[in-house]
Length: 123
Image (cartoon, rainbow, N blue to C red; front, side, top):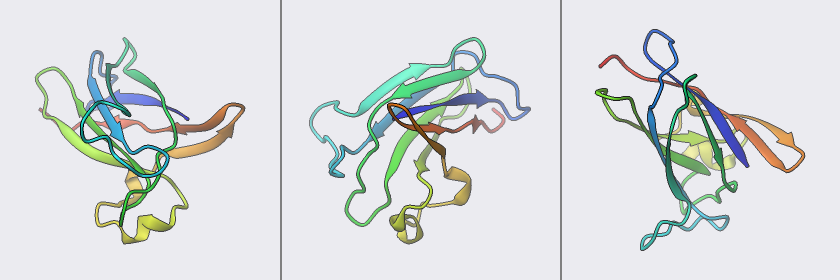
């Protein structure tokens, strides 16, 4: 799966150097509680873009298939959220689910292509 998008400030301007931290379950819905599998961090480029190559996570017990993300700009507040996948049966039962947290998806030659743009709150 390829997840990409931009980080924007509250005025919809690109955020250079925003820090994104990702963590997710493996394909069976299990999280690595001892190491760093399916975890990573990166910063946005000069146009506020990020690009994550990973697997489609499995759904954990009692929850929806999701990718957890922390996003912060320099000197800004840290936003912690989850990104959900459209059409997942677990979405309706997950208390954190909101439609505005759905990634946009399309099939790609080598797997799922997903996009999501983050808009950060004012500092």
